[in-house]
Image 1 (tube, one colour):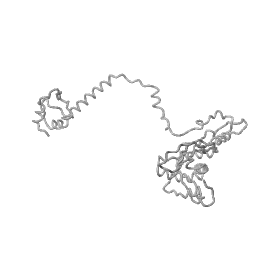
Image 2 (cartoon, one colour):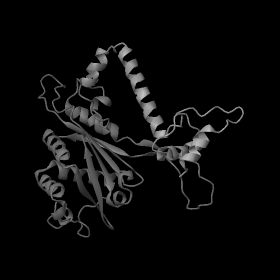
Image 3 (cartoon, one colour):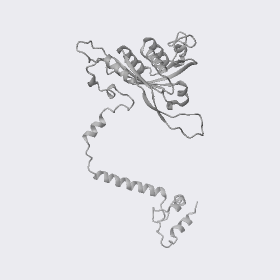
Image 4 (cartoon, rainbow, N blue to C red):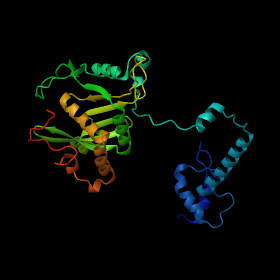
Length: 315
């Protein structure tokens, strides 16, 4: 701490050539560290002594606040755009999620002459066609140059129709109970898939990958259901209108086969589209701490264990 005499001498010190004088309230950065503490220690600074930084900050703040208030008072009022005001008061749009409609894929106006069952048949036939994917051969040699990618035609999707009752129950349960475990019975054992439903879409990821990678886990199968044809009245004039729901399943052929995809989706329909499945879903989602896996794959579970009993297998 500098004595008051030193501060007084400092304030009277000659100014170096070509240097701006230290006026009151205008401190150089280097001197500001100690001048503020030295001047604040003096109870009655001499006339013309340097301000402390606190005094300077307060003076500047008050000056700029008053100037800003003066400018605001003189500024003309803003004209509010009616369109922007209406948009701001409107209900915010729903979050952008993957929630396609059948009309995003098909031109239903062009299919008015067909019944719902005929449209479902065309839908299934279209999705049964192989799709072209890029495959990179892997010979297991880490030091070998990268192989040239090739194009392959593989079965990687499927589709069909759902009766209205199954569709309605499926959508209701997927909304109420969006998570479940779906088993896949293989010859070598049981593989569990974690199902996550959102709106009309359901993704199935292996439980092992979901536990390992969490939100970054990649689904092996994605199913979508569409209700655009539930109240369909197209077809012949004398035909009885009968609606249908449609489903589409896309799967990763490098991870599961067509048979495995069919087995998984059939299990999804049983879990989310039947009364007995709804009971197990409710216990799984509402009381997970009391849930037993035997309710899914036990002898008397929703999906009895068929391994080694000659029952159906996905492989």
